[in-house]
Image 1 (cartoon, helix red, strand yellow):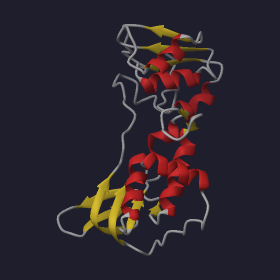
Image 2 (cartoon, helix red, strand yellow; image 1 turned 90 degrees about the vertical axis):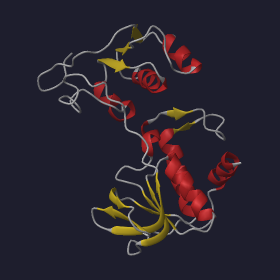
Image 3 (cartoon, one colour; image 1 turned 180 degrees about the vertical axis):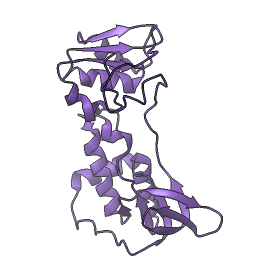
Image 4 (cartoon, helix red, strand yellow; image 1 turned 90 degrees about the horizontal axis):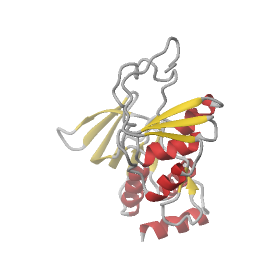
Length: 237
């Protein structure tokens, strides 16, 4: 029911534009930390239930779906939808329901007494309830050189950084949906994508596996692990 309701709202997308957030207001019924799919969904439900709701979206709202290319398994979009576009529509729908969204980052929460206090770098907000929907971060492999060359050849976002590696060979580590989706996307830019996986079979969904295995620009390195990342000013190997 939620998906059907969401789809209808996105297609309609009419009525009054969302109001600008009142940044002077600091007291709410519900404060939601995070603006990915869970945070926006929580905002929709709380606002529809009549609660005065605030979402603190953080510096980069949208969650990991912002770094995703085409989303094919979200109901209501027969031909799929790009991850960033889906998050834009979720934000619009959440605002239309009356949720206040402020692009500020929570740095601390005080749960000792009600109303709970949520602190950002510039403000203190109060809520009778707090929902934490901060999502997840990309998983690191934890090898020597990874931190040193982060942003200097080591990337965790293919859609963000793929164009920087045009006409180069690229290594992708992993065998799940995220790794396979990133590897497939990167074939638009790379001469070859080397996919390093510690097992002898992929864990990704069947359709993602088929696309990758049938892509002649992806070279698989089975039963293999990255043990070190080396370079000078930038990662080299």
